[in-house]
Image (cartoon, rainbow, N blue to C red; front, side, top):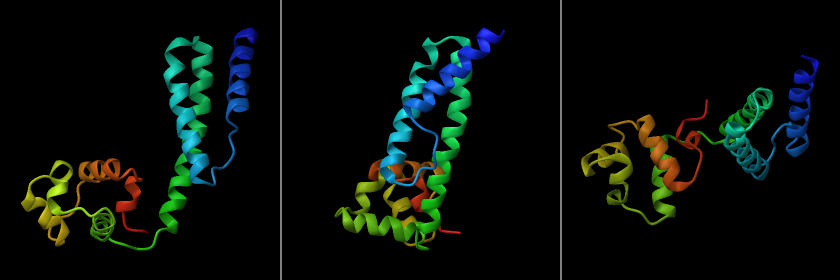
Length: 143
């Protein structure tokens, strides 16, 4: 039993050596953390049961660090409405309402969202975040 526990502890320490569990304080560090998390999730199917336990324990902590950084970005964001953010992105990228039918739906739906009579839904926010390669949190008003 001790040998098994040592294997898990050693693998956990190996993961920490590969990517240290410290607070994330920059977008670059955040990107690296996400890439490392994806890497260890990809290999999780090809490791022993004890190594998998170490990956899960490590990943849980890394996810918390990633989430804390993302929450800090939300707090720093000025209080713009989701429509303000969308209009800004449209302007910056020279886009028109027609360019959003895939992400938002019909021309009528896009128009309603832009004039404030209809709110963005979660799936629309996810699609917009993916289109613009930004965090979905950019579309949520600051608290």
